[in-house]
Length: 293
Ligand SMILES: Nc1ncnc2c1ncn2[C@@H]1O[C@H](COP(=O)(O)OP(=O)(O)OP(=O)(O)O)[C@@H](O)[C@H]1O
Image 1 (tube, rainbow, N blue to C red):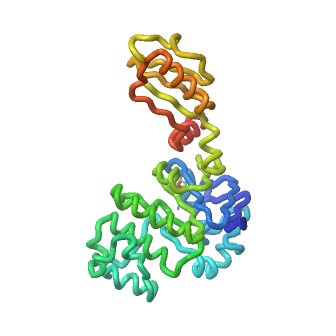
Image 2 (tube, rainbow, N blue to C red; image 1 turned 60 degrees about the horizontal axis):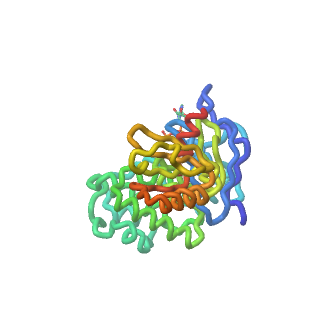
């Protein structure tokens, strides 16, 4: 698969302060790449560099085969950009704003549930509606590469799901997407590949599957009766018995340990109430990253 973005040794300075400290990134055609990190980690600075809005202090950046800062025309023609904050003319209506950008809004207003707000002035839109309008505008011209900087901040759960559906539709059509978000479940549901930044550096990166598989999975249940952990069968994972009676098994052998546990419960006639078995979440990976820092 062709790389749409290649970044090597990227550094970005604001005066004496180095916000991005030598990062490497690759984004393949047609994938969704999530750039995650704590506040101030350097995500927006990196995105702005990829979008051609900022020159790097050092390193090389290739986007769609060009240097995005030197060749902004290429980026403008082929990429859609949804910034973290947009400065729309507040007195224009939604329809006027869309016409200003393009003759053909296609069904983007419909897809993002804004068609009924066409004649409303931008200043009268709710925060969530404005965010959806940002996305509509980024989609005009059917870009092959889309930058989404915190696209669902301020959206209610239904609008967020609708936005995810739109993004999934774009991926199915072959669009490449670079996303930043503070909602880890958003990245977990959409990303093929991700990087977690911490204070200007990449702390973790890889495919979503590999990043999650690197952390132990978890089995949680209420210990039956008044049994102690010594009653449990031999498990590969570490067992923690909370005073509340809840047991947590952290394991790299989820399927095997779950099988042993269920066979034991069956044999002994126990019910494991509130049983949950789950692979690691991005939230687990994120917290580990912060603990390790
Ligand atoms: N114009 C600027 N001048 C000086 N420092 C800046 C400027 N813009 C950003 N910074 C600093 O650079 C660092 C990285 O900022 P950046 O906005 O890239 O982080 P971020 O990961 O996007 O954070 P957030 O999640 O809060 O949006 C922060 O410490 C920030 O204070």
